[in-house]
Image (cartoon, rainbow, N blue to C red; front, side, top):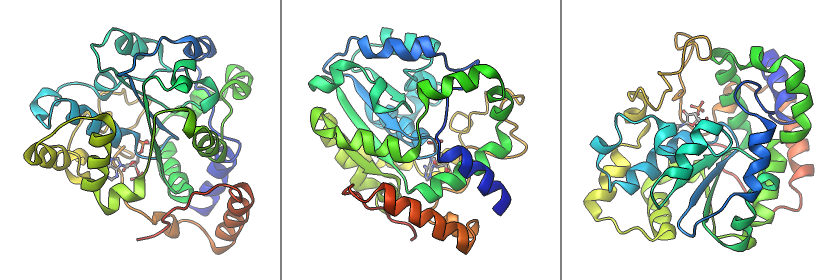
Length: 286
Ligand code: A3P
């Protein structure tokens, strides 16, 4: 386990990159000139920070907790990816309010967002748990084979982006945008209050019962049993569903089961150095 963490952390520190065959630099480049509507909502995450959780919550908020309205829709249809061409077409043609999700770093974002058009919900998770979640994801996702060619290498500089840069760049520009910052750990601690913060930020009025329904269908247990939330539709060649699942453990502090003492000390050193001027703190264990 420790050897694998080492390998993944090498990937993690320089950052994740474009996946050839899935992402294309041209599509990513077009995003900056994207026409933003005031009612647009952008969910931004570093991978493995609870993206799918936000997709579930936001799509349920929009239908006032009525799960029957979303149950047969793919996550990417409910909350499309702006960096994926087909998914983005759905976002563009969606009725207002349009909601999309992205792992992209700040520098690729539409100019309109920086002029306080639309709204951004940024979800952060403590990076040790992100790393462990990523490690498990790589065990069953066949993305390594996709990234091991030259296109990947040439794309690293386009999309090259590590956790520290992602969090820091978005957070440091927050005042330019209509921006809500939430953490995975706060969602674990008190999902209701985070959902209330989201509904208030988006100015959506839900009754107490509707709020209960959103929360009920967004619990780990219910999402774990939801094939859409586990990307069951993705072919086995890309995600080997026998080897893992998207909804894996859903806890805070799992990193303690994987990091050696030395790795933890090394990580803490890097963290302290890179985050020294950033007024953010994380919950590392519960
Ligand atoms: P773990 O691998 O630690 O379990 P992303 O969608 O950004 O890839 O994030 C996936 C991570 O979010 C996984 O973490 C997954 O279990 C967790 N997650 C997704 N939905 C969740 C929920 N309802 N409750 C708790 N964790 C959830």
